[in-house]
Image (tube, rainbow, N blue to C red; front, top):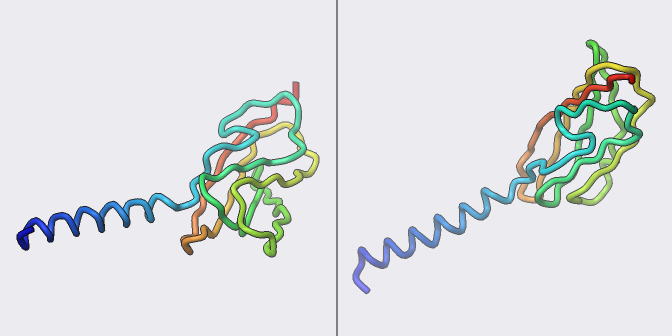
Length: 119
């Protein structure tokens, strides 16, 4: 194999390896309540499912300018799923903000919202 081919093959393999590593970030894949859901009854828990094991480091519930921190067990092992209890909720729009630390050391943040109609 000549030098140019060897360089091309090596570059291709390296890019594939690094692309796989970049894709290992723990992205939120689903939640319950789902993002933008309109609910008739208040949920008792917030459930988050990530694509790769991660450590949940922060979870906040916001509504009408008020913030309710939710308890996160910082000593819990990395997981792909989390289920945390919610306080009693009144009708309104809620935003859930989360922060995680993935196994590859990258911090991720995100949010989702849902509305409790009160019907």
